[in-house]
Image 1 (cartoon, one colour):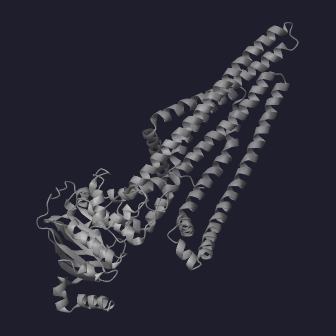
Image 2 (cartoon, rainbow, N blue to C red):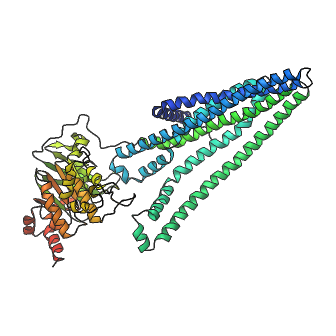
Image 3 (cartoon, helix red, strand yellow):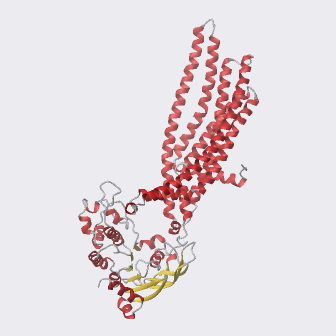
Length: 604
């Protein structure tokens, strides 16, 4: 294995420092307590080792003594002291375990919070990038325990280092070469550990996508989203086999790596055993020649064994720190993702009341890492109090227009303005606070009906009457009244006592979220696609009341909805090909009239 470069060493040290500071920031008192206990655990065994020598020597001196009672008293005194040291060692060990458990729980929760914060912070585009998912998967694997392992490893390194320094000084009084033998005995194990860590790290990065794909098959087999089709199309055997094939491949490669390490460990330990027992022969020879007392013999035997254990522990800690540093780089790699959609250095104030409205001015857009233009030269406007509709085939760019309005992406050309102010000059939080959006793939929260609506406007108190009003405007009032606990009934079946809703009923809850938000712009993407005609009519009766004085954008394939708009834009392959009111577009007998007539004809 080639030695790591100076740059690699520095990066590793910086990662260790970052990990330590992270743990210290989260749990400073527990970390300090842990290191105090580390020092105690390092020094107390050494005291015990010396006390054993004193006990053995006292017993040896008492054999054949003229005053055996006095000899027993001296031995008993040392035994009592050794017992006290043993009790203190046991207490330190118990406290150390408690501190480690508490510290680990605090750090694990803090790391989860960091992952959650970063996943919310990054732009939507990252969630359309497989490389992001690979990095996220690796970070989720390592973040919960690696920082804690690094702090524990540093503690063990200090503990073993202190023990080793004291034992080395003791063994040096026997013969300086004994300390050198210790180092030689432990070195092969360190080499094996470092080599294995590097190989495992490289293997894990190469297999991240396979691990994610296996987990994807697992979610298909166990989640509710695919349960119906798995049974109807008899797909269980197919996905079980695919999962098993991937896991078998991963398992074989992991076992191959573990086999290599086991062979290496065996060779290293065999070498260490030969050197240890050769040293024991040397110490025994000195005792037989009378150079050492029996107490010295016992002490040096145990000192050498403990010294080897401490050295192995210290070198193992170094190897562990190297491994943890490598794998923790996965977490820090994920934390380096930065959002591109950010506030301007000095954001302009959001207009309290829009006067001229919203405008798309020559807007072009290409999704990141793609070549195809999704939108080109888009010009449209919405005035205060106006309702516009976007119609067109799937994939024409309608939903992308909504994403640009919400600044989930920024245009690659042109600009979008509110009262003449470019959206990029406004505060992201303030801008989004003025937009109520319900997308086709709206979220279904396994919370109460009240919370499902309240989440759209958390400035309100959960008991605010506007939540019930929004439910009524969305046509969900009667639905919620008939549930066991009304608005406070838990929706979905994830938790005990929950009640599942139909797709159309969930859509009404999502619409209520749009209506409860105090915003100047309302955007509904296929708002009634899952509703029957009567429910749709009920919703739009409430819709007109809910958006009074606000701008509204409807994206829909339902022309009974679209014809209510003040102005309709027909989008085709990323371009606006027609615009006007329903009557104007029908009179023009163009694309819109053709689509409307085709849909209307289906009801004749």
